[in-house]
Length: 388
Image 1 (cartoon, rainbow, N blue to C red):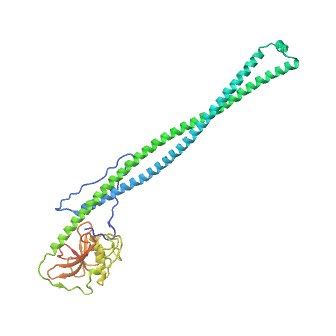
Image 2: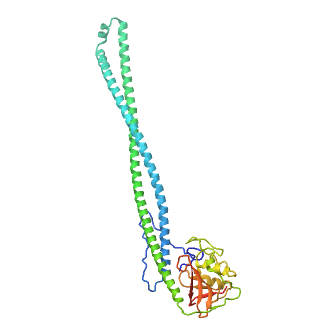
């Protein structure tokens, strides 16, 4: 009946989920269908199974989310690398264009120098083809001959120097171009490799997110089934209470034991607490649960209510009482707490009065999983009673 005492699920078991490779294999979602047949349905077992499945699925989904966060970080890093490479490629392409332009300008200068040198070489050739006697004969005097000889030697040196300088400049510029060309090639290779890595991680992230979506869908489907089962269970609980109250005819309420004051269930102080909630009352019970109401009722009637916060669900109350030396049996008295031990959580009710026909008048909270107050007249059946 879902009457939790101290936690949403008071007794939690660790679920061992087999670790799977979230990057290399597609995880299989464990989703077991639930029989919806109304007859002889063990609602609590089915609800518990679905809750366990959701816990396992949520654990795997959390692992996927952690992996997705790692993948997103790696993808972001690769994207920054790609951006930096694109910037470097643009810079190197601009440098390549600049050096190519410079080489073209140098080549034009080389062509110009080659033309000048060609003229100089032709002149030198003509002059060098003359014999010493012819050159001396064509000179006005010895001094002019010496000057012409010196000019020839100087021109030859100038030609060699010019050629060396041009060749050196051309070699330097070509070396710079080769370096930039290699940088561009390296940049583009790295860019291709990085883009390939990013593409692989993008695929893994997409697969991861698809798996998360499948787990979310399964969890939502299980929650829908849980809600439907709880509604069916609440309907059967209500039918049970109506059946118990079917006795006809007036009855006489038996007197309550000494020291037990009558209570008014409408005075329960936590009736307006949010629902559902994880807010503990002074006895460690979640407010607007059956256990919180009965703990308050015992205290409000003038008796001591032990602190049983953290000691199980409603179905453990009779065991807690026996452990504390409080009498428990099958004979109801006004002021007792009636314990129903069936189901995952069990249910506790406060016995407001006992009737002469053996029926009891009870007040309770959350009998229909709605966190609300209700009363009923029932017969004890297999209930046990705690005599606080």
